Image 1 (cartoon, chains in turn red, brown):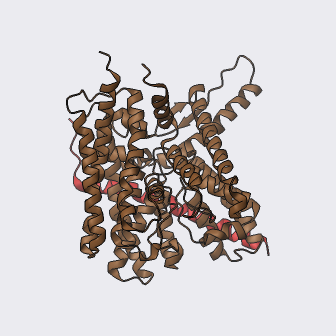
Image 2 (cartoon, rainbow over the protein chains, first blue to last red; image 1 turned 90 degrees about the horizontal axis):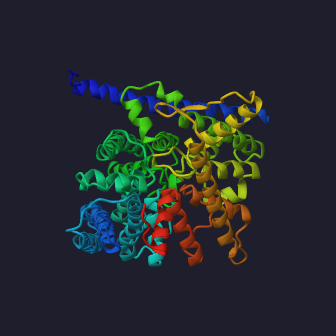
Image 3 (cartoon, rainbow over the protein chains, first blue to last red; image 1 turned 45 degrees about the vertical axis):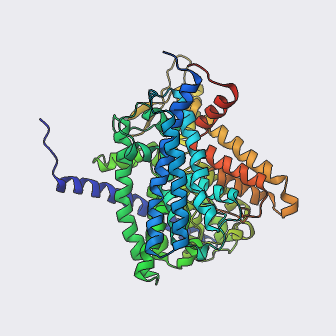
Length: 44
Length: 504
């Protein structure tokens, strides 16, 4: 029989999912910053 | 047993009535805000509007109280499309009564813009608008992001037999769980948890921008609701420019990008499937398209000297482009700056971004990343077939929470929807063009605004105001409605009304 998940484990699992999504967005912003630096320096 | 047309109409009226009655219940939220803020006139407007919505909603439900509630596919589609229209007509009553709109059509435009998470507005004197009205604007956007049908299924319907057909009629087909009611509730579970986290961060960001804690909470709540739903409404006419804060801008970016992700992706990650993040076709497509479009726009914007520093390029150029790509419509520039300052390359990049849009089964609009990915894979498959020996079988696979094989039917559906979006964009360029000379609109402005409507984005190059001809307003309302429901259910509604009932 499947064991019931505790509230703590559920909170950890869902928070980690949320953090992964936030991490992906931060990575996208970092890529944009690199592009902005390259574009700005490229025109000097 | 085959039902008569009258019986069918009664069942559809029941479901439409349920959705309209839900709106009456929801009006209690802005009513409460108005009472707390002592906006008595607005509170009376909401009381009257809720009474009207309840009368219409329950009246329609009473009409079909003795009929079986099962829906066919056609009726499910007609009901979903019809509910959005009637919802617009009823939801705009408090706007119209408030006196902040010049006409009932303008009020309808704003409700459709909210429901469809577009974000273009025709409100007058927004900076002095009552909190109750702002609450209603943001609430409509937030609910529209998740879907009105999803809302009604989650909280007001219990085991109704037509649930799944209504859900599909609202352009959603993902099932996070085997049961559609549970799926609808899972969507709300995700949204409400993000509401708590997002509002807290926006609240902190608004306080850091110098707003008093009480007002900052309302601004935080509203900006989260508008951002998460990729709506783009803001409580101030200057939109995000009002806050003058890099921190606040970054917080908004985080939540509107996450809001543009597929609910299936949220669910998969929340269930512990971490690999999904980089295997998912939509995430990969979105990453590639944003990187390419940002690079193109940045190169020109930096080169022409419009945004000469890295900071301005990020805060104005990147922000606008990612706001467009996620179909949010938050703005860190003034509307006319797109038309006057951005060059042809960057304007083309942002127009393409608006048309591409976010993920399927998310709060975002546009073609959707999955269709772009599938179209690309279909072209790749055809190329491989040409290069391979005649007897070879070429199989193209893709990953969307599970591995799937790209077949002709999937490719055809994706390409048809993209073609329909293009056709609609073309129509929305042609209609305002008729009035262009009188209003001084140039073609790039009209094309930009048409892409914004088509993708349910909400960025404006300055065309959308209350003074535009009613024909353009009606075409924009239709465009937002069609774009959000992804054509099918609206076409079925039109077919049903014009050709009568067709048996399936």
